[in-house]
Image 1 (cartoon, helix red, strand yellow):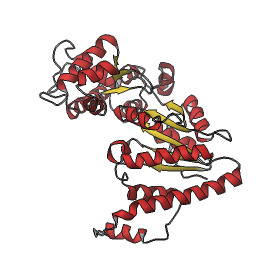
Image 2 (tube, rainbow, N blue to C red; image 1 turned 180 degrees about the vertical axis):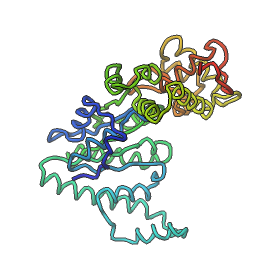
Image 3 (tube, one colour; image 1 turned 90 degrees about the vertical axis):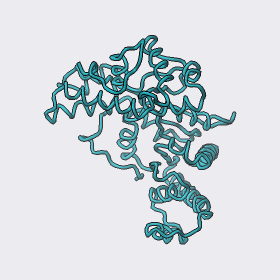
Amino acid sequence: MGAVPYVERKATLVERPGAMRAIESILKPQGGYARYNMIVGNHRTGKTTLVHHVGHQLDGILYVNISPNNVTDKTFVEEFAKAFHWTPTTHFWCDMLLSYWGISAGEAADDRAILVKGFKEFHNQAKVFKKNKGRSPVLVLDNINHLAQVNPKLLNILQDMAKGAADDRLFITVSVTSEGGTLIQMLGKFCRSVSSRLGKVMEIGDMNHDEAIDFLCNKRADIYSLVGGHVGLLVSAVNEPDSGQAFDGVRELLLGDVELVLQEGGMELRGQFREAGIQIANHILQHDRISHRDFYQISGSKSWGDQLLSKNIFTTAPRSQWVFFDTKPMEITVHALNPGDQIMINTFPEIRK
């Protein structure tokens, strides 16, 4: 069996048959498949949970979660090694203990060598699996977007490894990433050469109306009007009434969270992105969306636009030329304000009416 974590179905899983079938086709492709794939979607749309649920039932899957805590070469290879139960025959684990005790081993130069050894061992195990099973194993790199800004060199290594493995039909790499400015950057890196092996780019988006209502079942249908089809928000909104919270209280909690996102995203008075954010928000309110060109032009530069996209206020779709509000509560919050005037972040009494 592979190394994909188990999902506590009752607590976190929202079954979406169409998405699960698509993920299964990516995690268990036909023999001879020679591409690497991506699964993308906004934060909290259920990407990781669905990958866990489908992947845990399949064999031959190596799952590595790239958290903000394991983006260096050394910490990444630690997670990588644990996923396929490999212990390097070096002083590597001694270094880990020294690090735990706060003692520097002073051998950062060895990190890349350990990385190479880890990849070599995985290549050997992949060959054995393919010989025994007659198909390629799958390497899932979850939250790979964390490498885009912090460790682009490692990202390039993984990209080259994915392409090389696809060329050799040794194993298949599946990258799971959130949307936004980092997604655009990621796609640029993964598609940078003419001979790119990038195959499917599957989007895990919001549920449609029928899926959301079916999920809600006997729950209050007006929750959909508040959060749309966003899986994470639907789960939160449904669980609150289950704990005795009235719908109006749920609304206040969700929109209160949006206030914090706006504040932390630099949209408060004299905030870094206030002026540009107001112009972009007003344009989306009037036209339902804004083009990438206009978004970046208003932002002032590509760098600033990428930063603004990372604030969870706005979002983009894969291979799309459009930018939208990140969530339905964000749209409701901004719409409840004075769209032609100023976005006041200090207090929002009119939102909760």
